[in-house]
Image (cartoon, rainbow, N blue to C red):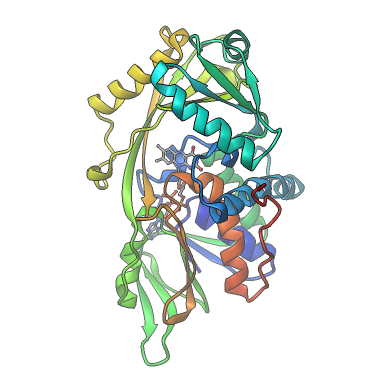
Length: 364
Ligand SMILES: Cc1cc2nc3c(=O)[nH]c(=O)nc-3n(C[C@H](O)[C@H](O)[C@H](O)COP(=O)(O)OP(=O)(O)OC[C@H]3O[C@@H](n4cnc5c(N)ncnc54)[C@H](O)[C@@H]3O)c2cc1C
């Protein structure tokens, strides 16, 4: 049984049925589901986190996308919303220079020879709405994914392989306290029984833990993203733009550009777009890309990132409950990390050996 059907839960369910297990996915599709709002940037190479172990995991997660999307293509489920477009890390103002210098050094140390410096004119040629920049670093490996499209593709593939989906809220776990085992999940649509439970409820994951008498330290981190449209632009191959300080721009086919995202830890589960949030996003994104001034606003997406205190996901067996596993707490990186985390946790749940993720060792 998998509780939660965002990208992480759907990926866990897909891995379970692919490995031949019976699986049930319980999902109530809350408003503010992070997967539906996420910007979709998959670029561990330009992540400024200096933790070696995290880089290895994130890099393996990015590589996993290739095999996952190939498997989904073999499953014949259509669009996965995934594309390799590259990204531009840009410095716009004098004050950005030291941060850009640090970023260039870190990226070159970790992935020697990967990224290429471009001049301002070339950067604008690749992303036409961009204003003049002081420096631009092109990462050809950066990818983007539409979380909604990938989640739907995973669900279709998993259902075709036998997954049962219960569209309901899980309200608690049926536990055998003496045996320290979970026997099933209580839901608004009745009880569901199973041998193993994976908790993947995103920012709502803490709810389920109360049945187990232990906290899951995950809280919602609200993010707003504005989607604008430049009709007539062929933006499908434009790179992602990541100002070294500031908000990012993610281009999609058909002239759609996502500008995000706010970080609002005090907002709790309030998923309403706000004037201040939208003002902040538009002000910053138009400064970076003045060519978007006449773009029309098509949508504001709001979601709750499942945040942890140390910005690391919670993965693996739930302490003291051998048949309960957690795959949650991916914060601002869950579209990147989620499918790979799901593979790891599904294997742990099935007792299958987990291969080491060493294909992207930090280049010393
Ligand atoms: C504005 C924004 C921008 C982002 N940008 C990026 C990005 O560029 N790159 C990146 O990698 N990540 C990004 N993220 C982060 C990423 O979207 C999340 O980390 C990821 O989607 C989390 O997936 P999840 O499945 O854990 O949670 P969610 O997608 O939130 O899904 C959780 C699901 O569990 C269900 N659920 C919870 N409790 C229960 C219950 N008791 N019963 C039944 N169902 C339940 C919910 O209804 C929901 O459907 C962004 C997020 C936001 C909000």
